[in-house]
Image 1 (cartoon, rainbow, N blue to C red):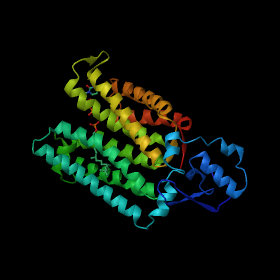
Image 2 (cartoon, rainbow, N blue to C red):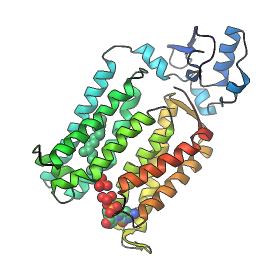
Image 3 (tube, helix red, strand yellow):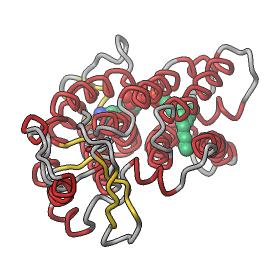
Image 4 (spheres, protein in one colour):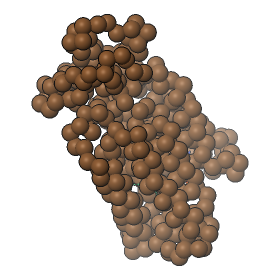
Length: 327
Ligand SMILES: C/C(=C\COP(=O)(O)O)CCC[C@H](C)CCC[C@H](C)CCCC(C)C
Ligand SMILES: Nc1ccn([C@@H]2O[C@H](COP(=O)(O)OP(=O)(O)O)[C@@H](O)[C@H]2O)c(=O)n1
């Protein structure tokens, strides 16, 4: 939502001592009532009450840390602006993805870890690492599209290798269950589609995408890693899944979601309520996603689709009561 006065206000962060471009043009860059009040007094007019309803205080922890959230998308852009910045971030992420997959390929082919574990470690780590690159991008509207090219290139690579057009034994080894290249066209391909969709639809403006990715990666990924090792007691309604696997999914998904959402809040990309409000919501979503993952429906719909889809839908439903967007 845009407010009428476009002139930027320079506010100096008490913590970082850097000028922040907090403006009415992008009121969402202002994250605390204090900043809002100061900006109002400088402009000498009241904000429309309908807009004020969208403002909720940053947590006291956040307010004590800095006057205005230091790294709003706009302020990051003003600090390190370069036409090549998003291209550089995109290039680094592409290299990061290649190194990650190659690293697990080396670990699996040298016998240091087994192939199934390698696949699940790629599954657990790629999504959150991808998300961690988002704050590095600028506030340019095209940034999310550049970010999305990283999973898109991996999607095309999986398509090429999975269909046999490109030969890449390393990728097959680190990403397939049994060494069969056609497996790349299922779970891993859906995984990349989810990353592309979340980057384009949610980007870093809301916690919904972060929660969906966390439950697909930290949740579903850990369910397999822990379930295969400790999952002796099976679920009564699904003999291929265990209590240990589901508990790991719930805990891993909750911890990863909470950590990423808190990190993005602390970076000023959106502002959240206190942990005592945020955590119950996130664990509620993680619980429902865990139940969905545990159902015997894997033959009908892949976990990499059902888990993020349900998490995203639920997160989007509760997001407005959890945060106020900062970009
Ligand atoms: C193994 C994978 C999914 C399998 O799922 P499931 O069937 O076992 O449930 C994940 C495959 C990931 C892919 C090959 C690599 C994705 C890289 C990612 C798009 C970008 C990471 C960037 C970062 C900076 C390292
Ligand atoms: N809730 C869960 C999920 C998986 N697992 C274990 O992880 C293995 C693979 O899980 P899955 O069938 O969901 O595999 P993916 O489709 O995610 O690769 C199962 O065979 C179980 O041994 C579990 O014990 N409990």
